[in-house]
Length: 185
Length: 132
Image 1: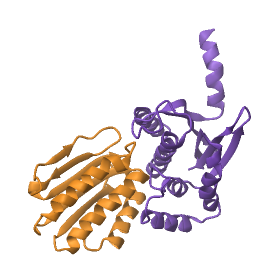
Image 2 (image 1 turned 30 degrees about the vertical axis):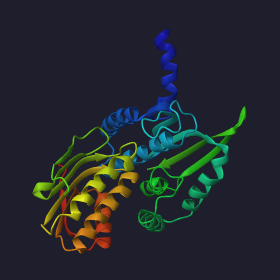
Image 3 (image 1 turned 90 degrees about the horizontal axis):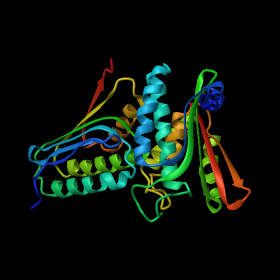
């Protein structure tokens, strides 16, 4: 019975061609462990070198977004290092492509700011994305960024289609919104 | 007088090996770079190099960078690191940059081209390495 219970759950993932998923708190140790796992997993899935690198890069950018910006934190927000924050991440296959899906709660007050960064990317060509990346690389890091303001541009550069995203306000807690982003590689 | 003590940091699963041998004028970075906080990791290294360069007296410097992967925030810090080296080269210290990357890694190859565009004073040597 125990195994059946587990299998029902696993079957859903298998039917959707999920090759990795994780829901919970992200720390740097968790990111390192997931990295090790997905590198091995992508090897056995037979992904070509450049594809594997783009998937890995997108995973790192997504996991850093969770660690830096998820509003559900186990660690005090003023603590600059060794953060642990909640999010969800999965990699799957659909047709001939890989997809990465990531979700984490954010403060509803930040939704418009995040949207304003992502929306322009949607209509940009790869050439425009690359030139925006080059420009951002040479600019001062935005004050509200813990990375370099390059994370979304990096994901957009690695993806083969425009990044998809969605904000879902939590019904029981309107101050919190679930931010989801999807990259197709 | 800046210390010539070498600076060595062993690689971790998410940060590269740092091997700065100031007395030999050789700075090497090797591995993968996606630390939790790239500014906290690279900031002090860049400061240390700046201090050393200030008293370096024009002896030629070799910089070896062999990174299989670096994330976006590391990219930004590396850019600052090379900016610092370029400033030293403009001031008269010859700097050779050996840029190693996997032969089919376009992202790192292109970043190397960005560095050549912006930091023309560095003597840039591209080394495409076969992964097979």
